[in-house]
Length: 146
Image 1 (cartoon, rainbow, N blue to C red):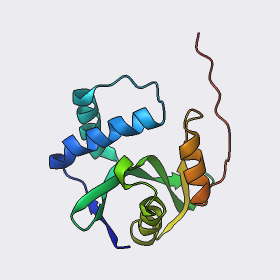
Image 2 (image 1 turned 90 degrees about the horizontal axis):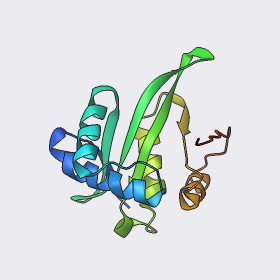
Image 3 (image 1 turned 135 degrees about the vertical axis):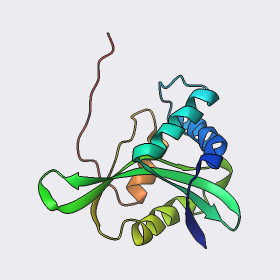
Image 4 (image 1 turned 30 degrees about the vertical axis):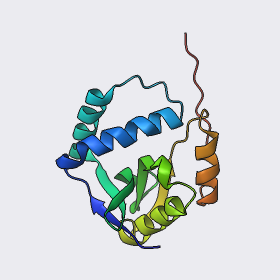
């Protein structure tokens, strides 16, 4: 399977917003944003985040939104926080998800010691995916709505 990463540009905002909307739906997030708001949100991410499209041949199969960070316990080490990772619904169950993570590690994250993610409790499929990709739970964040 030949995937490649391509840095996203502002011209990709419509497809990024569309995929972000699907991600919000899939994880059953409480985010109420519509397409215009999501497009603006993605535009703002370009300021401090990296956004890569995951591409097979000429087709966008997904995207990843991530940020390099310093390790708070060891200033010599860098880590990455993946805020959003998404494989399009019609491209799932084909190995692109795991292959995309491996490609990201081999190309963009060569000098990184740790990757961190958050997975919503409302997203059991996401939890299973990240577990298959080699991620393990580290802490539980709890919330009370009042």
